[in-house]
Image (cartoon, rainbow, N blue to C red):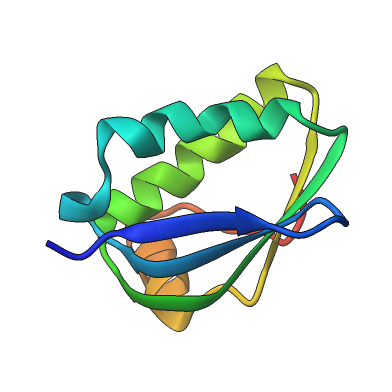
Length: 98
């Protein structure tokens, strides 16, 4: 099973690397929501996402929901075409800022 890794730099930019798929979403990734409370402004760079499916789309939606709860300005950078297509098919629009 492929998984993804979430890392950060010193500028509140988080990098997702690997697969954002249903099978890669684990209990550990659910615990990762706390990073959304670490700053008032966070960017997530998705340029290193290899594969994505509806599970990955659901994770992005949950990050958006939690960023609103934590009152964190969330932005996505380099959104893969796979996720943009999934969003369009499901009637959800992925913006670069929330």
